[in-house]
Image (cartoon, rainbow, N blue to C red; front, side, top):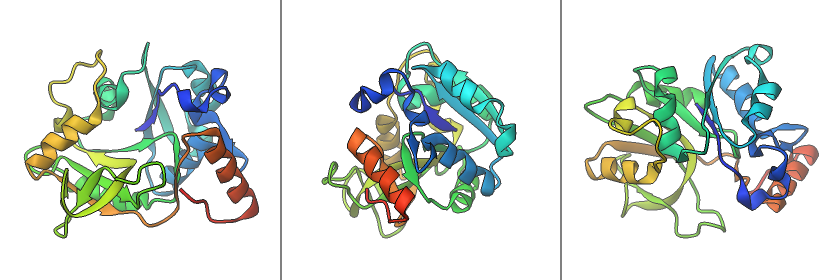
Length: 230
């Protein structure tokens, strides 16, 4: 699943007339970078949620056939937050574990490895596997702690930032309404307290494209072949 329903307030005025995932860097929309890399890793069935200017996303991407994937859409009248959007899309995602990618990040994550991590999740065991990155300037305190045993906790361990990429079992979202906004962090913290969240560090290229300046920097780095800096 690619999350594409956010309004992108910090990216205004760019997002007033273009949904954030369709903003371009290096000559192609942010979301297309994800689709191409997922396809290369063998992820052929994609679900994309949308709200703000969602019709533009569907028009731009279609059914996914030109990328070698099948895309289905999960429209939201108004954005349901991360967990709420996933809960809405569960009927399309099925009963097994799945990968989720934030549509407004740029990365070169190993989706093959993330898929293998997803396959190891179970409804009565681990419910999530997160990719974590070194803390960027805009989030110096980090989000969670990666422990030596590979579990992720709310405190302790190596303090890192959640990349927006993870694998989840549908059981993590049990009981959530498909029509109400819900944040992901409280669900993750509750699962962490039960020892049900694992993770690993992503040391490759990763950029949270959260401001026009970061988008410009990413575009410049991609066009000149320089390493993008988060």
